[in-house]
Length: 304
Image (cartoon, rainbow, N blue to C red; front, side, top):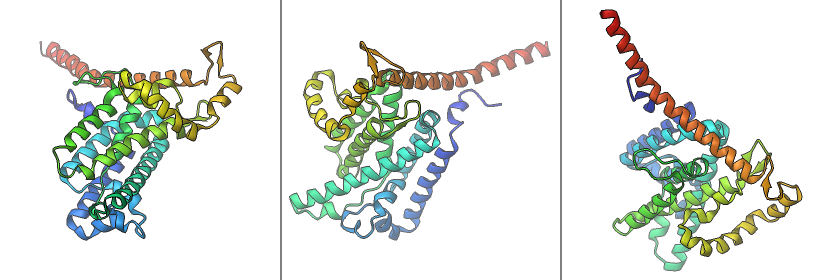
């Protein structure tokens, strides 16, 4: 019988356990065989011809603290997101976001070198799973935006924004901020980009989440949204094209009321599934202490 509170640290998915093992093994490899770092980490000057760095760089950590934080975060966030998305979609999200994140880091490093002519941008090793973790935070923001996170009592929709603000603020006081800050920024954006435009929705056979509650401006305070929305709309038209017109042509709304399968209705169902999954998980964790209490009472009665 599980002791009270232990269920919180169990029931992790097999996929997340496997990915956590990959992170641990990757860390051990670079610790015991340091010569593998130039072949696994993203070093912009060596990415050509070592193009596989764009994939492998995200699946190992150089520090012990990094691998512990990444594995624990993956297990807990995956425990919530994978049952909702499905294992295949969860794995696809991780692969795509990781690849796009480090592709953007590579392009940025090359651009900074040509602008500054500082070779440090060419030979700085980039690695770590934190870009994917930033993307997974965006997934939590999408599914349970108004749910308060336990302990810190902050709504989930603000978690990615708070993480970025704290990371940018800490970059002024650390010397190695260039190795993690671009990855966090691009990981957050690529996670949102994937969920906004690319993720398949089996219920409607459409892609993405075009709801207003998941717009790019929702990462910012309401005061800044009138400035952010016009800029975001430019990229929206580039990526979405005629999606808005297509939605109207297919009659996804009637008199302002969402039809089944429309963007707002789909977003509401997604949040309901997320809230239901969270409630079920919390209910399971509360059930264990209650069950143990009943057993203790029964034992006491038997002894009497």
